[in-house]
Amino acid sequence: MIRLILTANRWLWFRRMNKENRHLAGDIRLASDRARFSAIFARIGMPALDGAAWLLTRAVGHATALELLYSADIIDAAEADRIGLVSRVVEHGKLMDEATKLARRIASNAPIAVQLSKSVVNRALDKSYLEHLPFQWEAMDENLRLAQHDVAEGGLAFSERRDPRFRGLEDET
Image (tube, rainbow, N blue to C red; front, side, top):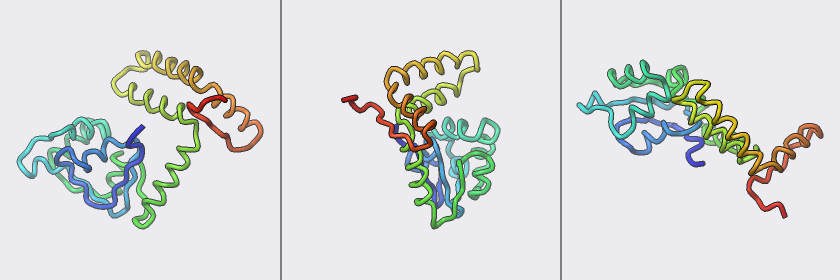
């Protein structure tokens, strides 16, 4: 599971497949309150390239992606948050601390369940609800097969009101 949390604390120009476009591929995108974003293709006489249109459409929706691509407007972090380009905006000096805290919270969860949740959500992007249901059942079966110990530990920890100690794919010995 790579690129789970990506941060933006400066200008991001979605212009070619570089670290700026990869920001769109992050599962969770945090931005500094000083961050600015623009898909500048039209401004430099180019169509959207290198996956930017595909990623942008999935991040903000069809109409908003087209507006950003056609206008090449520069938007601030608050607008990026409003349209769903970022998951959350944080104070500039606290961006990396917030990303680290979030990463630690995620890492404290059952790792296989987190990976399977990512898979199920990604598979849902182009499916109807009924088409998506088999993927949910498949993920549940795989989680029980690979991480039955984590499922049991999660329930036990909850009933005992303590933090769980998940093992993921560690050996059961």
